[in-house]
Amino acid sequence: MLSNPTIFFLILTVFSTSGFGQVASTAEATKSQEKRAENIPSGINDSFLDPNMNVEQFIKRFEVESREVFACRSQILEAIQLKPGLAVADVGAGTGLYLRPLSRSVGDEGKVYAIDIAPKFVKHLRDRANEEKLGNVDVVLCSDRDVNLKGNSIDRAFLCDVYHHFEYPEGSLKSIHRAMRTGGKLILVDFHRAPDVSPERKQWLQGHIRAPLETFKQEIIDAGFQFEEQVAIDGFSENYLLRFSK
Image (tube, rainbow, N blue to C red; front, side):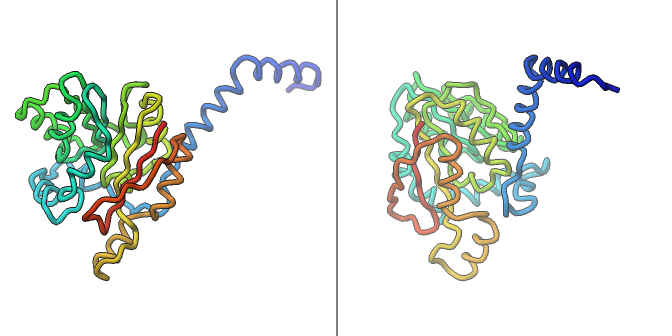
């Protein structure tokens, strides 16, 4: 037991100057990243992580004209502001709806990172990139806390109908910010929590989307991004598109 106050003070001084305080600070930062999003439905990603997931069923569900991000994809691509040579991350690439358009937009000198949390989607994306001969596409398996990209590796981050699935948005957004080069842009497409739609559809969205546009916007600003504008998309009623920059 330490009874001499002088010795105790010296030991505390050694700890604080030897990195102990930094370790504690790092631990606290990590802990904050572990905080699960409030109001997010339990098991929201279970169907994607199911080893028996049927990818074809999701293709039929996602790649149809009745889905706004499919019907309005040309306007959405324009809002991403791509050009040859850029690197774009399609975070939550899913079935690969935007895989070929993104690949063509950045050209052979550019790069597309197709990122997803679901192993079945990752395999499908790799197969699709190979079949369509998209040589500038890299497929990345991410975690629920990190998009798994190197620092300063991307110019655009495209989050299409996926952000509401982020279970740990603070950590995921920080990893996107770290991966993005200065001057890069983040494009968010997501659902209004209470759009002017049928009562049944509105009820489903309110149970599935954890927060409204204003909350998602502030979370992205808090991660270090600057809000640029909300882009009007003809044909959007359930969805909205926000653009941010670093």
